[in-house]
Image (cartoon, rainbow, N blue to C red):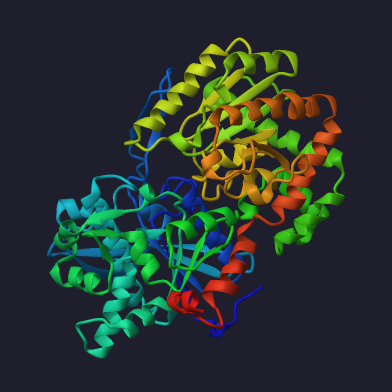
Amino acid sequence: MTSKADDGKIAYFSMEIALAPSIPTYSGGLGVLAGDTLRSAADLELPLVAVSLVYRKGYFRQKLDALGNQTEEPDLWEPQTRLQPANRTVTVSIEGRDVKLQAWRYDITGMSGHVVPVYLLDSDLPTNSEWDRKLTDSLYAGDSRYRLCQEVLLGIGGIAMLRSLGLDDINSYHMNEGHSSLLTLALLEEELELRNSQVPDKDDIEVVRRQCIFTTHTPVPAGFDKFPQAMVQQVLGERRTRLLEQAGCFRDGILNMTSVALQFSHYINGVAMRHGEVSHGMFPGFPIHAITNGVHAVTWTSPAFHDLYDRHVPEWIRDNAYLRYAVGISLDEIREAHRRAKAVLIEEVQRRNGVSLDPSVLTIGFARRAAAYKRADMLFSDLNRLRAIAKNTGPLQIVYGGKAHPADEGGKALIRRVFAAAAQLKDDIRIVYLENYDMALAKLMVAGVDLWLNTPQRPQEASGTSGMKAALNGVPSLSILDGWWIEGCFEGVTGWAIGQDGRPETIDTVAEAASLYQKLEEKIIPLFYRQPEAYAVVMRSAIAVNGSFFNTQRMLEQYKANAYFPQNLTHPEEILQG
C-alpha cells in the first residue's frame, strides 16, 4: 500500500486542517476531512506535503448562555509550543506591499514511521504592517478583502514557501476546496517565466492543468468565494489581474475561486456519488468525478472498540477493509464495548453541564456546524408527538453540539430553538447541548450515543462524515438520504433513512419530519428496548458494512489511482467532443 519513489510528490492545500484538538486550525468538516486525509496519507506512505495557514486566534471558542445565545472569543494558542519553525521566509505582494511569511511545521507520522509534513504559513512578523500581521490570525473572519488576502497568502504564498523549502519536484497540487485556487496563478507565472513570456497561451494553461486536482465540497453556488474585479486588482495588482483575465478566469467582472480551480484542473471531483451528480449539473462542460469521503479509522475509533478490533481483526489498522470481518464478533462484545464508550460520554456530559444521563436510555446524538440547512430542530417539529413517543414507546435522551459561524444569525437562531425545545420538553425528555464542539468532544459523542441523527436539506449535504465516525463505533444512523448516506444506508441493516431518496424538487419538510417520527416510534425505539440483540446486529453491521468502506484509507487509494498518478490525462474539451 506504499507509493513508488518515482511517483513524485503531492502538495495538498487546504484553508483549514484539523491536526489535533489542541491546535485550533479548523472550523468543522472540511478541516477534519483534511486532517484525516493527511493521517491516512502518512499511513499509506504517500509522498505528500500539506500547506495551510496558522490561525493564531483559531476559529473561536463558543460560549452558550441558558437560552442558547452564542458568544465568541478568540481561541488563542502559541504555535511555538506545538510546532517547529521551518526557518524560511518568503515575500508575497498584497496591495503593492511586500508581506513576509514564515512557516511552522507539524509532522504527521504514519503507522510505519512515514512522515507527512504540514506547513502552516504565518504573517505575524515585525517587518509587516499591523494589518498584514493579522492576516493569519483567524479562520473565516473579516470581510471579503481580508478573505481574499488570506487566499493570496495560501495559494501564492504557499507555492513560494514550497519553492523556498526546496520542494521543486511536486507533480500534483490538490486543492481541497477553492480557497487555494490562486496557487494556479503562481504555477502559471512559473511557466511563463520559463518561456520568458508575458501572455499565457493554451499550452501554458495545459501545463498547469496537468498538475492540478480540485475537490469541491460545495453543492450550492452561494457557497463559492467570489470577488469583484476591482478588489482583485487592488489586492493582486494590475499585472496579475490581467494574467487571470487572459486565462479566462473572470465572468461578468467577478473572480469565482471555484471557477479558477475548475479551469486549471485535470481532475475534478465531488465528495459523494450524489454530490458528483449535483456538481456535474452546476459545472456543465467539466467532467466531474466522485470520490466519496471517509474518515481516519484509528483516530475516530473509541478505545473500547479499538481494543475489540485489535483482538478479533488485528489487521484492521493496516487495512481498514478488514473491518468487514467484524461480522464475526459476538454481539455481547459489541454491546460491552459500546457500554464502555457510552459511560465515557455520560461522564463528560456530567462534568461539562452537570446533567446526569441514564445509561439505559436510548441516546440520540446530533452534532455538526449549526447552519440553517442542517435543520437541527427537525426533531422538534411536533413537540407533542415527540413527547408522546417518549412516553408510550420508550424514553429518549438527546445530546447536541455544534457552533454557528459568528456572522450566521440563522445558525445562532437554530441553537436557540434547540434550547427552547429542550426547556419545553424538560419534564419528558432530557436534552443537553454541549458547547464548544471540537475534535475531542466529537470523538466522545460519535462513540457514546446509541443513534446518530442527521437531517440536512437535500441536496446541501455534499457528503457528511460524522455518521461514518459513528459507524466505526457501532452506532447506526438515522438520516436524510443525502451525501454519503445514500451509499451507506441499508434500511434496517446499517441504520434507517428519513424520507425517500428523491430529487431536490420533491422535498417535503413536513413529510420528512413525519418519517423521522415514524422510524423512531415504529422501528428504532421498539428494537432498542424490546429486541436489544437485534439492535446489536444493526450496530455490528454498521461497523462491517460502513466502517470498512467509508474511511480515508479507501478514499486515498481512489485519489492515487484516479487523480494523483493517472496514466492518461484528458482535457474536458476532448471528452465533450469524444
